[in-house]
Amino acid sequence: MLQAMYQAIPVVLLLLATGRWMTSAGAAVECPPINLAELQSKRDYRSALAGVERGPDSDWQKLRTAEVNHFNENVRTLTKGQSVSHPGGDLMFILGIFPNHAPALELLVRLAVRENALKPRGVGTPVPCTLQRAVAFRPEDPQPRMLYGIYLARIGENDEAIKQLETAEKAAPDDANVLYNLGLLYLGKKNYDKAMGYAQRAYERGFPLPGLKNKLRSAGKWKDGD
Image (cartoon, rainbow, N blue to C red; front, top):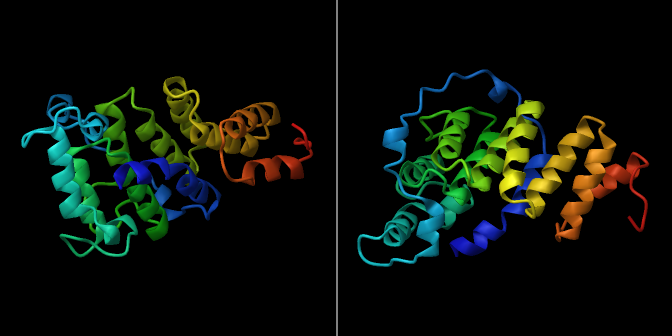
């Protein structure tokens, strides 16, 4: 179940990238200092998902237990909470154990966009702080950086969004979703050469939806056969 959802992130992010922009949620927020020693005591989502060790005290088992109790269909569709009233509370529980849990981070961004809020219902920590924490936990993991970049773009911080996405690109140069969203951001800056380059790379890697291509075509930059 989880692996399938993880692979579905690109389509979801496309919807985020082309939807309405956040307004009041873009207000400045000062995040508390990150306690790196405390943070490094948390569990890595990627290694837990791989499940090399599957004993009763393994990270794989802890991930399975957390998702059984806090990541049912209602939470995954942001309909309602599983252990609490609002899905944000369940997402934050999972992220408290697995800070780089990519599906939970993606849903948290979607929830922030839907409610146009720094702290959606059930979420005690501002969303950008949770994303910063995920990046600090595993700087080499491209997924939290990509999601942080998407969030920054949604609140109008496009230059910082590009920095995060370009760092994610270095770690995952073939990630079509990273490439696609960089193309969108450079298109917004009217840097058509970079937008075209990222668009071509994204589509060569199978990005499924034509929004960026259509925008470039409308700007007279994309020709059929490119």
